[in-house]
Image (cartoon, rainbow, N blue to C red):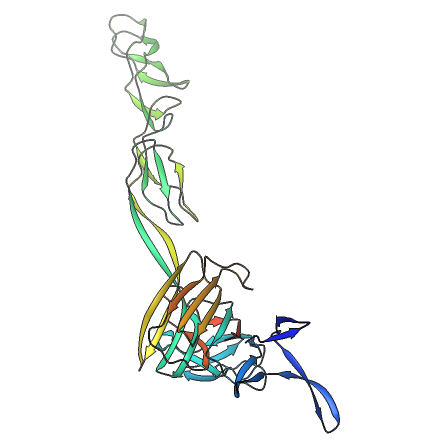
Length: 374
């Protein structure tokens, strides 16, 4: 709560921290003011409260947040919050909505939380473990599956994210396989003395070598004559020409995001591909006699990392400011406001963990309370 001080005839907002000089036992010293009061028409009214900041830079404890200043101490009223590696960490399931609180002495405050993970938020106007209000961050993942039809020969293969799909068919390549060779004409000379046949003819076979065979029967006196005829067909490796039948092979491996590549030949099979989108919200929650409901939902364009919750006990107004980066430098969209129709404004506020739809978190890095001037 920032008070105002008149300086040189002009009213100025007081700083978040005010010091007063106090003399005790003859010794004077400046002291930090935790709260300031002024009397208006005979009634004392709170004029100033110092800012509260907790960045959890202290000894790890899974079940206790302890005290940041030796004055105010956190109390777990639902489940357990603790400190792990200098971050506030919920050590109870989000489904029970763990809450830790401090009595800050004011119903009208701004709660600042930084380094949020989904599900974490601010609890406020806390009466007890069953009666409270809160703002909680949330993230939702939505998926959409699409059917991709197969393409015909010499088309395109599709490989979505690290998964191989379909088979390419190779329609046959030239210059390999088995060919059939035709016969060759024999040549050579046979010698037949009388009626007895003898001698050898030779056939130049494809490839440059000879095959021998027995001459056919001759007659009369010894004569010499030319061989003739054809050797049978045979198989050999094709030097060129010829083709083999079609074969199948796996499409190339995909990786990361889906992409296209060209098949060597053939056809690819149809497949399904899934795409994802994300939604980011802050829910205003209320618990009445232990029944927890969502009073309002605010939608934002990116993940909420920083959150300011402004609450006004006098009017029931709840204003949410969301930030996309630590340090509250980049606000997402505009302020979002909800007015509670019925509520009990207390001075006890704190932190909460609620169930997140996706990427459930449990931690955040800092908690600050600034007091709103009434």
